[in-house]
Length: 576
Ligand code: PEP
Ligand code: MG
Image (cartoon, rainbow, N blue to C red; front, side):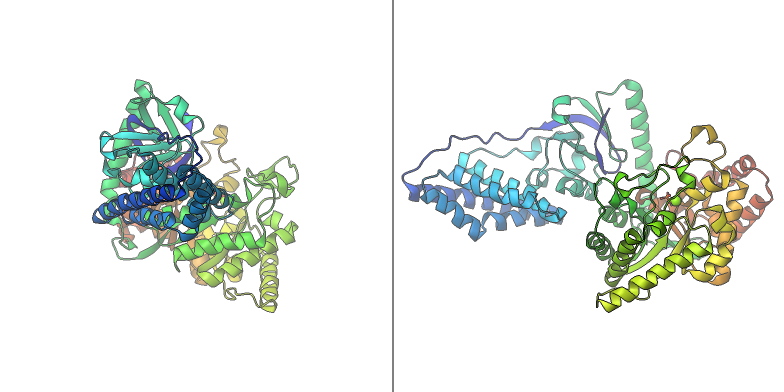
Protein backbone atom coordinates (compact mmCIF):
# COMPACT_ATOMS: atom_id res chain seq x y z
CA UNK A 1 0.00 0.00 0.00
CA UNK A 2 1.27 3.50 -0.84
CA UNK A 3 0.44 6.56 1.23
CA UNK A 4 0.16 10.17 0.17
CA UNK A 5 -1.83 13.34 0.89
CA UNK A 6 -5.59 12.80 0.77
CA UNK A 7 -6.53 15.49 -1.76
CA UNK A 8 -10.05 14.66 -2.88
CA UNK A 9 -12.54 12.35 -1.12
CA UNK A 10 -13.93 9.12 -2.43
CA UNK A 11 -12.76 5.80 -3.80
CA UNK A 12 -11.63 5.36 -7.42
CA UNK A 13 -10.74 2.02 -8.96
CA UNK A 14 -9.33 1.49 -12.44
CA UNK A 15 -6.33 0.72 -14.61
CA UNK A 16 -3.31 3.01 -14.41
CA UNK A 17 -2.80 5.41 -17.29
CA UNK A 18 0.67 6.86 -16.87
CA UNK A 19 1.26 10.37 -18.15
CA UNK A 20 4.95 10.67 -18.85
CA UNK A 21 6.46 14.13 -18.99
CA UNK A 22 7.26 15.03 -22.62
CA UNK A 23 10.98 15.12 -23.40
CA UNK A 24 11.75 18.65 -24.42
CA UNK A 25 15.50 18.35 -24.88
CA UNK A 26 17.59 20.43 -27.27
CA UNK A 27 21.23 21.34 -27.77
CA UNK A 28 21.84 24.94 -26.73
CA UNK A 29 23.34 26.76 -29.71
CA UNK A 30 24.94 30.11 -30.29
CA UNK A 31 23.05 32.02 -32.97
CA UNK A 32 24.39 34.64 -35.32
CA UNK A 33 21.18 35.54 -37.18
CA UNK A 34 19.51 36.90 -34.06
CA UNK A 35 16.67 38.52 -36.01
CA UNK A 36 15.58 35.22 -37.53
CA UNK A 37 15.87 33.57 -34.11
CA UNK A 38 13.74 36.29 -32.53
CA UNK A 39 11.11 35.74 -35.19
CA UNK A 40 11.20 31.97 -34.56
CA UNK A 41 10.61 32.72 -30.88
CA UNK A 42 7.75 35.17 -31.60
CA UNK A 43 6.07 32.57 -33.81
CA UNK A 44 6.34 29.92 -31.11
CA UNK A 45 4.72 32.26 -28.56
CA UNK A 46 1.93 33.04 -31.06
CA UNK A 47 1.40 29.34 -31.72
CA UNK A 48 1.26 28.54 -27.99
CA UNK A 49 -1.19 31.39 -27.31
CA UNK A 50 -3.34 30.41 -30.30
CA UNK A 51 -3.55 26.77 -29.14
CA UNK A 52 -4.35 27.93 -25.62
CA UNK A 53 -7.12 30.26 -26.80
CA UNK A 54 -8.78 27.34 -28.59
CA UNK A 55 -8.59 25.31 -25.36
CA UNK A 56 -10.06 28.18 -23.31
CA UNK A 57 -13.01 28.48 -25.66
CA UNK A 58 -13.68 24.74 -25.50
CA UNK A 59 -13.49 24.80 -21.70
CA UNK A 60 -15.88 27.76 -21.43
CA UNK A 61 -18.36 25.98 -23.69
CA UNK A 62 -18.12 23.04 -21.32
CA UNK A 63 -18.63 25.34 -18.28
CA UNK A 64 -15.19 24.32 -16.97
CA UNK A 65 -14.52 27.89 -15.94
CA UNK A 66 -11.82 27.26 -13.34
CA UNK A 67 -9.60 25.50 -15.88
CA UNK A 68 -10.49 28.15 -18.46
CA UNK A 69 -9.44 30.98 -16.11
CA UNK A 70 -6.14 29.31 -15.25
CA UNK A 71 -5.30 28.47 -18.84
CA UNK A 72 -6.17 31.94 -20.09
CA UNK A 73 -3.82 33.25 -17.40
CA UNK A 74 -1.08 31.31 -19.22
CA UNK A 75 -1.61 33.50 -22.27
CA UNK A 76 -0.97 36.64 -20.21
CA UNK A 77 2.12 35.01 -18.73
CA UNK A 78 3.50 34.07 -22.14
CA UNK A 79 2.82 37.59 -23.43
CA UNK A 80 4.25 39.36 -20.39
CA UNK A 81 6.18 42.30 -21.96
CA UNK A 82 8.98 42.23 -19.36
CA UNK A 83 9.56 38.52 -19.89
CA UNK A 84 9.48 38.83 -23.69
CA UNK A 85 12.00 41.72 -23.58
CA UNK A 86 14.34 39.68 -21.40
CA UNK A 87 14.17 36.65 -23.73
CA UNK A 88 14.77 38.82 -26.80
CA UNK A 89 17.74 40.45 -25.04
CA UNK A 90 19.33 37.04 -24.45
CA UNK A 91 18.71 36.09 -28.09
CA UNK A 92 20.43 39.31 -29.21
CA UNK A 93 23.37 38.22 -27.04
CA UNK A 94 23.58 35.03 -29.13
CA UNK A 95 21.55 32.48 -27.15
CA UNK A 96 19.16 30.25 -29.10
CA UNK A 97 15.44 30.85 -28.50
CA UNK A 98 14.97 27.63 -26.46
CA UNK A 99 17.84 28.41 -24.13
CA UNK A 100 16.94 32.11 -23.78
CA UNK A 101 13.31 31.34 -22.97
CA UNK A 102 14.14 28.54 -20.55
CA UNK A 103 16.66 30.72 -18.66
CA UNK A 104 14.14 33.52 -18.13
CA UNK A 105 11.32 31.12 -17.18
CA UNK A 106 13.58 29.38 -14.66
CA UNK A 107 14.36 32.75 -13.04
CA UNK A 108 10.63 33.40 -12.58
CA UNK A 109 10.02 29.85 -11.35
CA UNK A 110 12.77 30.21 -8.72
CA UNK A 111 11.28 33.49 -7.45
CA UNK A 112 7.69 32.13 -7.33
CA UNK A 113 8.77 28.85 -5.71
CA UNK A 114 10.49 30.58 -2.80
CA UNK A 115 7.46 32.72 -1.90
CA UNK A 116 5.79 32.16 1.49
CA UNK A 117 2.25 32.44 0.12
CA UNK A 118 0.79 29.30 -1.33
CA UNK A 119 -0.95 31.25 -4.05
CA UNK A 120 2.31 32.71 -5.37
CA UNK A 121 4.09 29.34 -5.16
CA UNK A 122 1.24 28.05 -7.29
CA UNK A 123 2.30 30.49 -10.01
CA UNK A 124 5.56 28.52 -10.31
CA UNK A 125 3.49 25.55 -11.50
CA UNK A 126 1.76 27.78 -14.05
CA UNK A 127 5.09 29.16 -15.24
CA UNK A 128 6.42 25.59 -15.69
CA UNK A 129 3.37 24.89 -17.81
CA UNK A 130 3.97 27.96 -19.98
CA UNK A 131 7.66 27.05 -20.31
CA UNK A 132 6.82 23.52 -21.45
CA UNK A 133 4.16 24.79 -23.88
CA UNK A 134 6.35 27.37 -25.65
CA UNK A 135 9.36 25.00 -25.73
CA UNK A 136 7.13 22.34 -27.28
CA UNK A 137 6.14 24.79 -30.00
CA UNK A 138 9.78 25.79 -30.58
CA UNK A 139 10.77 22.12 -30.90
CA UNK A 140 7.77 21.24 -33.09
CA UNK A 141 6.50 18.55 -30.69
CA UNK A 142 2.77 17.75 -30.61
CA UNK A 143 0.82 17.83 -27.34
CA UNK A 144 -0.50 14.65 -25.71
CA UNK A 145 -4.01 13.98 -27.03
CA UNK A 146 -6.31 13.77 -23.97
CA UNK A 147 -8.78 11.74 -26.03
CA UNK A 148 -6.39 8.80 -25.86
CA UNK A 149 -7.11 8.38 -22.12
CA UNK A 150 -9.35 5.31 -21.83
CA UNK A 151 -12.64 5.58 -19.94
CA UNK A 152 -12.40 4.71 -16.24
CA UNK A 153 -8.62 5.17 -16.10
CA UNK A 154 -6.67 6.14 -13.00
CA UNK A 155 -4.36 8.95 -14.07
CA UNK A 156 -0.83 8.49 -12.72
CA UNK A 157 1.69 11.30 -13.11
CA UNK A 158 4.69 12.88 -11.51
CA UNK A 159 2.90 16.20 -11.65
CA UNK A 160 -0.38 17.20 -13.27
CA UNK A 161 -0.25 20.72 -14.63
CA UNK A 162 -3.30 22.81 -15.54
CA UNK A 163 -2.66 22.38 -19.26
CA UNK A 164 -2.58 18.60 -18.83
CA UNK A 165 -5.88 18.41 -16.94
CA UNK A 166 -7.61 21.05 -19.06
CA UNK A 167 -8.39 18.82 -22.02
CA UNK A 168 -9.24 15.69 -20.06
CA UNK A 169 -12.84 14.48 -19.99
CA UNK A 170 -13.21 14.58 -16.21
CA UNK A 171 -16.27 12.34 -16.12
CA UNK A 172 -14.15 9.53 -17.60
CA UNK A 173 -11.46 9.63 -14.91
CA UNK A 174 -11.75 7.16 -12.00
CA UNK A 175 -9.00 8.78 -9.89
CA UNK A 176 -5.86 10.90 -10.11
CA UNK A 177 -2.64 10.12 -8.23
CA UNK A 178 0.61 12.06 -8.37
CA UNK A 179 4.13 11.90 -7.02
CA UNK A 180 4.28 15.64 -6.21
CA UNK A 181 1.73 18.29 -5.25
CA UNK A 182 -0.29 19.16 -2.19
CA UNK A 183 -3.92 19.56 -1.25
CA UNK A 184 -3.79 23.13 -2.59
CA UNK A 185 -2.20 22.37 -5.95
CA UNK A 186 -4.19 22.98 -9.08
CA UNK A 187 -4.75 19.30 -9.68
CA UNK A 188 -6.21 18.86 -6.17
CA UNK A 189 -8.60 21.77 -6.70
CA UNK A 190 -9.77 20.33 -10.01
CA UNK A 191 -10.11 16.86 -8.48
CA UNK A 192 -12.33 18.20 -5.67
CA UNK A 193 -14.36 20.32 -8.05
CA UNK A 194 -15.13 17.35 -10.29
CA UNK A 195 -15.33 14.96 -7.32
CA UNK A 196 -12.53 12.78 -8.66
CA UNK A 197 -10.88 10.80 -5.82
CA UNK A 198 -7.29 11.89 -5.59
CA UNK A 199 -4.09 11.28 -3.62
CA UNK A 200 -0.98 13.45 -4.08
CA UNK A 201 2.62 13.47 -3.01
CA UNK A 202 3.16 9.69 -3.09
CA UNK A 203 6.91 9.11 -2.72
CA UNK A 204 8.42 7.07 -5.59
CA UNK A 205 5.04 6.65 -7.32
CA UNK A 206 6.40 6.60 -10.88
CA UNK A 207 8.79 3.73 -10.05
CA UNK A 208 6.10 1.66 -8.40
CA UNK A 209 3.32 1.75 -11.00
CA UNK A 210 3.24 0.40 -14.56
CA UNK A 211 0.79 1.27 -17.30
CA UNK A 212 -2.31 -0.90 -16.96
CA UNK A 213 -1.76 -1.91 -13.30
CA UNK A 214 -5.01 -2.15 -11.34
CA UNK A 215 -5.19 0.75 -8.85
CA UNK A 216 -7.40 1.51 -5.86
CA UNK A 217 -7.25 5.16 -4.80
CA UNK A 218 -8.82 6.07 -1.46
CA UNK A 219 -8.88 9.86 -1.58
CA UNK A 220 -10.27 10.11 1.95
CA UNK A 221 -7.53 8.16 3.74
CA UNK A 222 -4.71 8.96 1.25
CA UNK A 223 -4.09 5.24 0.62
CA UNK A 224 -3.34 3.77 -2.79
CA UNK A 225 -3.18 0.03 -3.60
CA UNK A 226 -1.27 -1.10 -6.69
CA UNK A 227 -2.33 -4.50 -8.14
CA UNK A 228 -4.40 -5.31 -5.01
CA UNK A 229 -5.37 -8.89 -4.09
CA UNK A 230 -8.89 -10.08 -4.83
CA UNK A 231 -10.17 -9.55 -1.28
CA UNK A 232 -9.00 -5.92 -1.13
CA UNK A 233 -10.41 -5.22 -4.58
CA UNK A 234 -13.78 -6.72 -3.62
CA UNK A 235 -14.07 -4.84 -0.34
CA UNK A 236 -13.09 -1.49 -1.92
CA UNK A 237 -15.45 -2.05 -4.85
CA UNK A 238 -18.29 -2.59 -2.36
CA UNK A 239 -17.23 0.48 -0.38
CA UNK A 240 -17.09 2.59 -3.56
CA UNK A 241 -20.54 1.42 -4.69
CA UNK A 242 -21.97 2.12 -1.25
CA UNK A 243 -20.50 5.64 -1.33
CA UNK A 244 -22.00 6.27 -4.75
CA UNK A 245 -25.41 5.07 -3.54
CA UNK A 246 -25.24 7.31 -0.48
CA UNK A 247 -24.06 10.29 -2.49
CA UNK A 248 -26.96 9.96 -4.90
CA UNK A 249 -29.41 9.76 -2.05
CA UNK A 250 -27.95 12.82 -0.34
CA UNK A 251 -27.54 15.14 -3.30
CA UNK A 252 -31.15 16.47 -3.17
CA UNK A 253 -30.33 17.95 0.28
CA UNK A 254 -27.70 20.30 -1.14
CA UNK A 255 -28.69 23.95 -0.76
CA UNK A 256 -31.63 23.22 1.56
CA UNK A 257 -31.97 24.60 5.08
CA UNK A 258 -31.25 22.11 7.87
CA UNK A 259 -34.56 21.41 9.55
CA UNK A 260 -36.55 18.59 11.06
CA UNK A 261 -40.02 17.50 9.94
CA UNK A 262 -41.77 19.73 12.43
CA UNK A 263 -39.96 22.76 10.99
CA UNK A 264 -37.35 23.59 13.65
CA UNK A 265 -34.13 24.72 11.97
CA UNK A 266 -30.55 23.99 13.00
CA UNK A 267 -27.17 25.35 12.02
CA UNK A 268 -25.06 22.76 10.24
CA UNK A 269 -21.39 23.62 10.48
CA UNK A 270 -18.06 22.00 9.61
CA UNK A 271 -14.93 21.14 11.58
CA UNK A 272 -11.69 22.21 9.91
CA UNK A 273 -7.97 21.99 10.73
CA UNK A 274 -6.59 24.65 8.38
CA UNK A 275 -7.70 27.39 5.98
CA UNK A 276 -7.17 24.88 3.17
CA UNK A 277 -10.11 22.86 4.49
CA UNK A 278 -12.55 25.75 4.01
CA UNK A 279 -13.00 24.95 0.33
CA UNK A 280 -13.95 21.37 1.19
CA UNK A 281 -16.31 22.60 3.89
CA UNK A 282 -18.04 25.03 1.53
CA UNK A 283 -18.18 22.44 -1.26
CA UNK A 284 -19.84 20.15 1.29
CA UNK A 285 -22.57 22.82 1.68
CA UNK A 286 -21.92 23.73 5.31
CA UNK A 287 -23.44 26.85 6.87
CA UNK A 288 -20.18 27.92 8.52
CA UNK A 289 -17.25 26.56 10.49
CA UNK A 290 -18.19 25.39 13.99
CA UNK A 291 -14.68 24.35 14.98
CA UNK A 292 -11.32 25.49 13.59
CA UNK A 293 -8.75 23.32 15.39
CA UNK A 294 -5.84 25.78 15.34
CA UNK A 295 -3.25 23.50 16.95
CA UNK A 296 -2.50 21.92 13.55
CA UNK A 297 -1.08 25.28 12.50
CA UNK A 298 1.46 24.96 15.31
CA UNK A 299 2.52 21.46 14.24
CA UNK A 300 4.94 20.52 11.44
CA UNK A 301 7.19 23.49 12.09
CA UNK A 302 10.08 24.33 14.38
CA UNK A 303 9.05 27.67 15.82
CA UNK A 304 5.89 29.32 17.07
CA UNK A 305 3.82 31.03 14.39
CA UNK A 306 3.90 34.77 15.08
CA UNK A 307 0.78 36.82 15.81
CA UNK A 308 1.02 38.21 12.27
CA UNK A 309 1.27 34.77 10.67
CA UNK A 310 -1.68 33.52 12.69
CA UNK A 311 -3.69 36.64 11.89
CA UNK A 312 -3.11 36.14 8.15
CA UNK A 313 -4.35 32.53 8.36
CA UNK A 314 -7.44 33.39 10.42
CA UNK A 315 -8.22 36.40 8.23
CA UNK A 316 -7.89 34.26 5.09
CA UNK A 317 -10.28 31.70 6.62
CA UNK A 318 -12.79 34.40 7.62
CA UNK A 319 -12.68 35.99 4.17
CA UNK A 320 -13.16 32.66 2.41
CA UNK A 321 -16.26 32.09 4.53
CA UNK A 322 -17.67 35.44 3.44
CA UNK A 323 -19.50 36.32 6.69
CA UNK A 324 -20.62 32.77 7.42
CA UNK A 325 -19.83 32.02 11.09
CA UNK A 326 -16.29 30.95 11.96
CA UNK A 327 -15.54 29.55 15.42
CA UNK A 328 -11.79 29.61 16.08
CA UNK A 329 -10.67 27.42 18.96
CA UNK A 330 -7.56 28.49 20.83
CA UNK A 331 -4.81 25.88 20.80
CA UNK A 332 -5.54 22.50 22.29
CA UNK A 333 -2.06 21.06 22.71
CA UNK A 334 -0.97 18.53 25.28
CA UNK A 335 -2.81 15.23 25.68
CA UNK A 336 -1.88 13.27 22.57
CA UNK A 337 -0.70 16.40 20.73
CA UNK A 338 2.89 17.10 21.69
CA UNK A 339 4.67 19.90 19.84
CA UNK A 340 8.38 19.58 20.68
CA UNK A 341 9.35 23.26 20.38
CA UNK A 342 6.52 24.41 22.67
CA UNK A 343 8.29 23.16 25.77
CA UNK A 344 5.59 20.91 27.21
CA UNK A 345 6.93 19.12 30.25
CA UNK A 346 6.93 15.32 30.19
CA UNK A 347 3.99 14.17 32.26
CA UNK A 348 3.00 10.69 33.41
CA UNK A 349 -0.57 11.26 32.35
CA UNK A 350 -0.68 14.07 29.77
CA UNK A 351 -4.46 13.81 29.29
CA UNK A 352 -4.84 14.86 32.92
CA UNK A 353 -2.02 17.36 32.76
CA UNK A 354 -1.12 20.69 31.24
CA UNK A 355 -3.37 20.52 28.19
CA UNK A 356 -5.14 23.22 26.13
CA UNK A 357 -6.25 26.23 28.22
CA UNK A 358 -4.06 25.08 31.12
CA UNK A 359 -0.99 25.35 28.89
CA UNK A 360 -2.19 28.69 27.50
CA UNK A 361 -2.67 30.22 30.93
CA UNK A 362 0.82 29.08 31.91
CA UNK A 363 2.29 30.62 28.75
CA UNK A 364 0.55 34.01 28.59
CA UNK A 365 2.71 35.36 25.76
CA UNK A 366 1.80 32.44 23.49
CA UNK A 367 -1.88 32.75 24.44
CA UNK A 368 -1.98 36.51 24.06
CA UNK A 369 -0.52 36.38 20.54
CA UNK A 370 -3.25 33.97 19.49
CA UNK A 371 -6.02 35.94 21.19
CA UNK A 372 -4.86 39.14 19.46
CA UNK A 373 -4.68 37.37 16.08
CA UNK A 374 -8.22 36.01 16.47
CA UNK A 375 -9.63 39.38 17.62
CA UNK A 376 -7.98 41.09 14.64
CA UNK A 377 -9.37 38.48 12.21
CA UNK A 378 -12.79 39.35 13.64
CA UNK A 379 -12.67 42.60 11.68
CA UNK A 380 -12.89 40.53 8.47
CA UNK A 381 -15.84 38.24 9.13
CA UNK A 382 -18.23 36.62 11.56
CA UNK A 383 -15.61 35.24 13.96
CA UNK A 384 -15.99 33.90 17.51
CA UNK A 385 -13.42 32.49 19.93
CA UNK A 386 -13.71 29.11 21.65
CA UNK A 387 -11.70 28.01 24.70
CA UNK A 388 -11.03 24.26 25.07
CA UNK A 389 -10.75 22.11 28.22
CA UNK A 390 -12.30 24.56 30.68
CA UNK A 391 -12.97 22.84 34.00
CA UNK A 392 -13.86 25.68 36.36
CA UNK A 393 -15.03 29.28 36.48
CA UNK A 394 -11.61 30.68 37.47
CA UNK A 395 -10.03 29.46 34.25
CA UNK A 396 -12.72 31.12 32.18
CA UNK A 397 -12.46 34.39 34.13
CA UNK A 398 -8.69 34.40 33.67
CA UNK A 399 -9.13 33.92 29.91
CA UNK A 400 -11.68 36.71 29.76
CA UNK A 401 -9.25 39.00 31.58
CA UNK A 402 -6.57 38.25 29.01
CA UNK A 403 -9.02 38.84 26.17
CA UNK A 404 -9.92 42.22 27.68
CA UNK A 405 -6.24 43.18 28.04
CA UNK A 406 -5.66 42.20 24.42
CA UNK A 407 -8.61 44.36 23.32
CA UNK A 408 -7.29 47.33 25.33
CA UNK A 409 -3.87 46.96 23.71
CA UNK A 410 -5.28 46.65 20.19
CA UNK A 411 -7.44 49.71 20.76
CA UNK A 412 -4.44 51.71 22.02
CA UNK A 413 -2.46 50.57 18.96
CA UNK A 414 -5.29 51.61 16.63
CA UNK A 415 -5.50 48.09 15.21
CA UNK A 416 -8.72 46.93 13.56
CA UNK A 417 -10.46 44.17 15.58
CA UNK A 418 -13.89 42.98 16.68
CA UNK A 419 -14.57 44.55 20.10
CA UNK A 420 -17.78 42.52 20.54
CA UNK A 421 -16.41 39.11 19.64
CA UNK A 422 -18.39 36.25 21.19
CA UNK A 423 -16.39 33.97 23.48
CA UNK A 424 -17.51 30.38 24.01
CA UNK A 425 -16.44 27.43 26.11
CA UNK A 426 -15.87 23.84 25.04
CA UNK A 427 -17.84 21.56 27.33
CA UNK A 428 -15.62 18.52 27.21
CA UNK A 429 -14.82 17.74 30.83
CA UNK A 430 -17.26 16.27 33.30
CA UNK A 431 -16.73 19.25 35.60
CA UNK A 432 -17.56 21.79 32.88
CA UNK A 433 -20.78 19.91 32.07
CA UNK A 434 -21.83 19.71 35.73
CA UNK A 435 -21.21 23.43 36.31
CA UNK A 436 -22.63 24.44 32.91
CA UNK A 437 -25.09 26.74 34.75
CA UNK A 438 -22.15 28.68 36.25
CA UNK A 439 -20.17 28.81 32.99
CA UNK A 440 -23.25 29.89 31.03
CA UNK A 441 -23.30 33.08 33.14
CA UNK A 442 -19.82 33.98 31.92
CA UNK A 443 -19.73 33.09 28.22
CA UNK A 444 -21.65 33.64 24.99
CA UNK A 445 -22.03 30.06 23.76
CA UNK A 446 -21.20 26.42 24.44
CA UNK A 447 -19.64 23.88 22.16
CA UNK A 448 -19.90 20.31 23.45
CA UNK A 449 -16.76 18.28 22.68
CA UNK A 450 -18.31 14.84 22.92
CA UNK A 451 -15.01 13.10 22.07
CA UNK A 452 -13.28 14.31 25.20
CA UNK A 453 -16.44 14.52 27.27
CA UNK A 454 -16.85 10.77 26.73
CA UNK A 455 -13.21 10.12 27.59
CA UNK A 456 -13.12 12.31 30.69
CA UNK A 457 -16.50 11.07 31.95
CA UNK A 458 -15.84 7.38 31.41
CA UNK A 459 -12.14 7.69 32.34
CA UNK A 460 -11.06 6.12 29.03
CA UNK A 461 -8.23 7.11 26.74
CA UNK A 462 -9.56 7.76 23.29
CA UNK A 463 -8.16 5.03 21.10
CA UNK A 464 -7.19 2.64 23.94
CA UNK A 465 -8.71 -0.58 22.61
CA UNK A 466 -8.74 -2.30 25.99
CA UNK A 467 -11.36 0.18 27.25
CA UNK A 468 -13.19 0.50 23.94
CA UNK A 469 -16.32 -1.09 25.37
CA UNK A 470 -16.66 1.81 27.82
CA UNK A 471 -15.81 4.64 25.44
CA UNK A 472 -19.23 5.52 24.06
CA UNK A 473 -21.22 8.77 23.98
CA UNK A 474 -24.30 6.58 24.52
CA UNK A 475 -23.22 5.82 28.08
CA UNK A 476 -26.01 7.13 30.34
CA UNK A 477 -23.46 9.25 32.23
CA UNK A 478 -22.36 11.02 29.05
CA UNK A 479 -25.89 11.48 27.71
CA UNK A 480 -27.03 13.02 30.98
CA UNK A 481 -24.13 15.47 30.92
CA UNK A 482 -24.93 16.46 27.33
CA UNK A 483 -28.58 16.99 28.23
CA UNK A 484 -27.69 18.94 31.39
CA UNK A 485 -25.33 21.19 29.40
CA UNK A 486 -28.01 21.96 26.82
CA UNK A 487 -30.60 22.58 29.55
CA UNK A 488 -28.28 25.10 31.24
CA UNK A 489 -27.55 26.86 27.94
CA UNK A 490 -31.28 27.11 27.18
CA UNK A 491 -32.03 28.46 30.64
CA UNK A 492 -29.46 31.21 30.20
CA UNK A 493 -30.49 31.77 26.57
CA UNK A 494 -27.10 31.07 24.98
CA UNK A 495 -26.68 28.90 21.88
CA UNK A 496 -25.13 25.46 22.11
CA UNK A 497 -23.42 23.35 19.45
CA UNK A 498 -21.92 19.86 19.47
CA UNK A 499 -18.69 19.47 17.53
CA UNK A 500 -17.46 15.99 18.50
CA UNK A 501 -17.83 12.94 16.27
CA UNK A 502 -21.16 12.10 17.92
CA UNK A 503 -22.79 15.04 16.07
CA UNK A 504 -22.88 12.86 12.96
CA UNK A 505 -23.98 9.58 14.58
CA UNK A 506 -27.39 8.61 13.19
CA UNK A 507 -28.49 7.25 16.59
CA UNK A 508 -27.45 10.43 18.43
CA UNK A 509 -29.35 12.84 16.21
CA UNK A 510 -32.91 12.28 17.58
CA UNK A 511 -31.55 12.74 21.11
CA UNK A 512 -29.77 15.99 20.23
CA UNK A 513 -32.90 17.32 18.53
CA UNK A 514 -34.97 16.47 21.58
CA UNK A 515 -32.45 17.96 24.04
CA UNK A 516 -32.63 21.28 22.14
CA UNK A 517 -29.22 21.49 20.45
CA UNK A 518 -28.87 24.52 18.13
CA UNK A 519 -25.90 23.59 15.92
CA UNK A 520 -24.18 20.47 14.67
CA UNK A 521 -20.53 20.76 13.61
CA UNK A 522 -19.26 17.80 11.61
CA UNK A 523 -16.56 16.84 9.10
CA UNK A 524 -17.25 17.90 5.48
CA UNK A 525 -18.25 14.44 4.18
CA UNK A 526 -20.95 14.23 6.90
CA UNK A 527 -22.75 17.51 6.14
CA UNK A 528 -25.43 16.29 3.74
CA UNK A 529 -25.78 13.04 5.68
CA UNK A 530 -26.62 14.95 8.88
CA UNK A 531 -29.04 17.27 7.06
CA UNK A 532 -30.79 14.24 5.62
CA UNK A 533 -30.97 12.54 9.02
CA UNK A 534 -32.33 15.63 10.78
CA UNK A 535 -34.94 15.98 8.04
CA UNK A 536 -36.26 12.52 8.92
CA UNK A 537 -37.31 13.38 12.48
CA UNK A 538 -40.40 14.89 13.96
CA UNK A 539 -39.69 16.70 17.24
CA UNK A 540 -42.54 14.95 19.12
CA UNK A 541 -41.14 11.60 18.10
CA UNK A 542 -37.64 12.56 19.30
CA UNK A 543 -39.05 13.53 22.73
CA UNK A 544 -40.63 10.10 23.08
CA UNK A 545 -37.32 8.50 22.15
CA UNK A 546 -35.25 10.59 24.55
CA UNK A 547 -37.76 9.97 27.39
CA UNK A 548 -37.41 6.27 26.84
CA UNK A 549 -33.59 6.48 26.61
CA UNK A 550 -33.60 8.35 29.89
CA UNK A 551 -35.33 5.42 31.54
CA UNK A 552 -32.73 2.88 30.34
CA UNK A 553 -29.89 1.99 32.64
CA UNK A 554 -27.08 0.83 30.40
CA UNK A 555 -25.23 1.80 27.26
CA UNK A 556 -25.96 -1.61 25.74
CA UNK A 557 -29.72 -1.20 26.24
CA UNK A 558 -29.63 2.36 24.91
CA UNK A 559 -27.76 1.33 21.77
CA UNK A 560 -30.08 -1.66 21.24
CA UNK A 561 -33.13 0.57 21.53
CA UNK A 562 -31.74 3.41 19.40
CA UNK A 563 -30.55 1.12 16.67
CA UNK A 564 -34.05 -0.31 16.58
CA UNK A 565 -35.84 3.04 16.30
CA UNK A 566 -33.34 4.54 13.89
CA UNK A 567 -32.84 1.43 11.78
CA UNK A 568 -34.89 2.55 8.81
CA UNK A 569 -33.06 5.88 8.81
CA UNK A 570 -29.56 4.46 8.64
CA UNK A 571 -28.68 4.36 5.00
CA UNK A 572 -25.04 4.69 6.02
CA UNK A 573 -23.65 1.37 7.10
CA UNK A 574 -20.03 2.17 6.40
CA UNK A 575 -19.84 5.78 7.38
CA UNK A 576 -20.89 6.73 10.86
C1 PEP B 1 -14.00 16.93 21.25
O1 PEP B 1 -13.30 16.70 22.24
O2 PEP B 1 -15.09 16.41 21.05
C2 PEP B 1 -13.52 17.88 20.21
C3 PEP B 1 -14.30 18.27 19.24
O3 PEP B 1 -12.26 18.33 20.30
P1 PEP B 1 -10.98 17.48 19.84
O4 PEP B 1 -11.49 16.25 19.13
O5 PEP B 1 -10.17 18.37 18.98
O6 PEP B 1 -10.34 17.18 21.14
MG1 MG C 1 -11.59 17.95 22.70
